[in-house]
Amino acid sequence: MNCRLCPRDCGADRALVTGVCGMPWSVKIGRACRHIWEEPPISGTRGSGTIFFSGCSLKCAYCQNYALSRGQGREISVRELADVFKLLEDSGAHNINLVTATHYACAILRAMEIYRPSIPVVFNCGGYESERTILLLKDIVDIWLPDYKYALSAPAERYSRAPDYPERALQALQCMRSLAPEDDFDADGIMQKGMIIRHLVLPGNLQNTFAVLDSTVKHFGKDVYFSLMGQYYPAGEAKRFPELSSPIKPLEYKIALSHAEKLGMQNAFIQLPEKNESKYTPVFDGSVSGEVYE
Ligand code: SF4
Image (cartoon, rainbow, N blue to C red):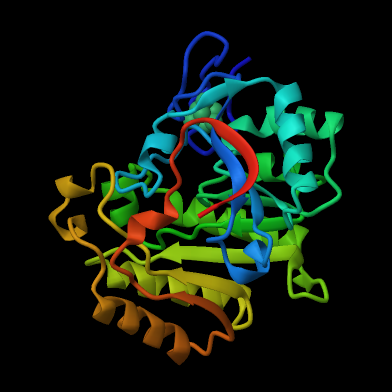
């Protein structure tokens, strides 16, 4: 069967070869654990039951989970994946958080047939998604957590070799919003349904950040939940690009935040730049645990 799950649309027969995402049909995961570094309505007090899937169709040069996106991890069966859902749910996680899972959409649907968690399911993705795949997942996903990495084509081409990212991501986010038009929270403020858009501020790329913020407010309104992330550190191949070779400066983040404020964004999560940005990146040793990763 030829895969067309993502906008790369490469048509690889993943039983025989791998496509741009670098993964066969069999599922590979880098780690499963409870994760406390997501936004407060996702991580809550008990952590988000996070499954980091290996491989990625976007493969940004600076990927903050570089080893994972390049395929590091351990192969598991669909049955085992269903068991991971149950383990995380039983551990007290607030939700099941599927990280970069687009290329495993079919396996995830099969695993959900074996075990459907009763806690919300979060689809945590790079934003470069096809509407067809989003619609495939509509009955199992409660919360959409897409990146909106680029609203300008030049950085999308330069860092991710995806010049069509801005239009594909906007279409994808609009599709997600149509499937989850309301943001619902429980009594403890934990999201049950809805969408949170994420943007990682890249050093030397404030024009792109401004364009993302402008587009977000234009298309999704001032009260959309939005996470302005300042955790960037020069991972992976970032050193190939002089402007990406150091963490973002506190002033750059401040300017980005001022732009969000000027636009009147009501529900922005803020993450100030820190010295130890890599602390947010787990070790991708294929382990599965209901423990909190700190
Ligand atoms: S998910 Fe992978 S194999 Fe499928 S179209 Fe995208 S890059 Fe190609």
